[in-house]
Structures are given as structure tokens and as C-alpha cells.
Image 1 (cartoon, rainbow, N blue to C red):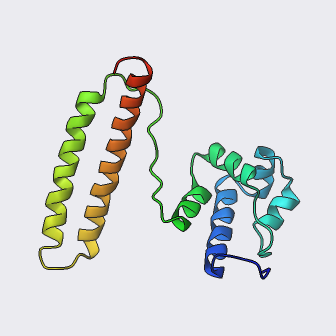
Image 2: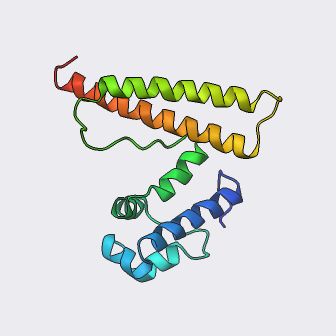
Amino acid sequence: MGEARYLPARDYFGLKAASRALVEHNGGATDAAAITRADQPNISRQVGNDMDRFLAIDCVADLEAACGEPIVTRKLAEFADCLLIPVPRGARGDVLASEAATVTQEFGKLLTDFGAAVRDGSIHGREAVRVLEDIRELMTGLATLAEDIKARAGAGNG
């Protein structure tokens, strides 16, 4: 690997692994070449062991769009200490009131589960899994609510 790198080597190995996973998720280098501007030999080299070659960002975008999974984007978000929350796609009709009620319920469930989990001063195992799932559900509900509010504001319904 070249000398002028900012991130630790493990991060580049993680990025390489995510790139390999993305190509495999799209059927391998030959199928990935049909989706992107890159040819199969270049894709194979870019996901191979050469740590100075990586998938081009436009190829990542094409492959993630094709498979519907933000595999490399999720890794990049992790490097930036960010969470990647999917934004709900498509209008589901009048969701504002029902989504607000759902988000309120999910927040209450999160507080209840979290309180029970840390009652003994620590959180582990199934407790952590349950609380993390509650957090993901709440964040997805909030994203749905935000998209509905944006759609209403854009349509002059605000």
C-alpha cells in the first residue's frame, strides 16, 4: 500500500472487503461489468489484493443501485462515524397521523426496553439486540415521518 494514506490499514482492508461483497452480490466480476463502465478484468483487479486499486465511486453507485444494497456506502458511513438510515421510497398515502402514532409507540418501547436492560448497570446479549432493534425501528419510523412531512410541504399542504 502506498505511503500517503490517512486511514489505518484495517479500514482499507474493510473497504476492499465491502467492495468484493458488492461485486459478489451482483453476481461476480463478469456480471458487474455488464452493470458498470468497467470491464471484467479491471473489476477483478479493483476487488483483488492490490491495495492501491479500488472500485471507482461511479461503479460502486451503479452496483449498489442494481442490487439495492448500500454495501460500500454503509462502510464509508461507518468511517465517518455516521449511521446509514434508508429513506422510505414511494408515497404510501396519508401516513402523517398513523406514522406519528407509531413513532410515539416505538419511542415508548425503546425507553421501556432500555430501562429494563440497564437496570443492572450493564447491557449485553439479547438485551442489546432488542434495544438496537428498537432504535432501528424508531429511526426508520422517523425517516418515514420526515419524508411525509417533506412531501406535504412540497405539495403546499403544510
